[in-house]
Image (cartoon, rainbow, N blue to C red; front, side, top):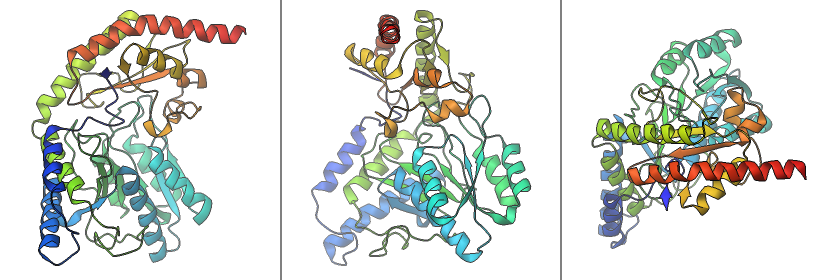
Length: 394
């Protein structure tokens, strides 16, 4: 199979597997004080140091979690509750319109159950939140009512990269913390927590294991815990830690960030060949997101295209039958018969939003994977269009 769904999960790196295999041979709860517990704690803290080093953070700022969804929920819910408790007038959340559902649904839950008022930050034609949009939202609604800003570093569907440094500077002018979901960016472009109040990353998007992630949280930032228990992880996230998974996380992060310029260049070349080949086979296909395939405004491994006249789910399964694995969008929304909220926010109609596929490359991608896509896409689109037309006639 040609695997082109790295945005959903990236294959486990050999370095991560080796680190986890070694750690699995040892017993010990990292909260225990005996020798086995101290050995487990050493694995955890060395992993914390590795993740912090890769993100330009202090080890004490890295809060380990079960992954991106938990990190996003801790940041969004925890920051909102703590800020509102300190100042009841802070009931507003400013949120990018194309965020991952881990953020969107957390924000909507707070609106439905805790009275949060949501200001949706509109995006431009490439899916980017421009700094002036955030500045206007802060000014127009009154910055003293804002609890937090949340905006992703790179979109999980179309790969568009936000200038989160500029967004953070604007938020900080008004003394407002910003949360950044950097799940997709880590391992594809340089990722830094410097100047960011809360940053979400996860292991399985950069070649690490499932079930391990982190929230890089500024030490002086007050966050109300979402889960209560033993008080592990600064009392922000309680729960027994998983030393083998964290060792794998750390090994994957080291490998993923070791030579990012070369990695990005390789992915851009492969992605460019893929887009060129797909458009040659299907000239009517439309590339979504940032059109500049050479710059840093788009994740180098992302190609998101719409195929007019097709239904994305049907096209995806036809490609799957030909040995090509991709997706119609976020893996968290797979099987949900709704048009992409990301494409709708960009102004696409519902039919276009349902006709799209996401091809994402990563550390294991090869020229053969790209050739598999470009040779299969033409016949698959023809069959998908014929099937869609038959259904409409019937």
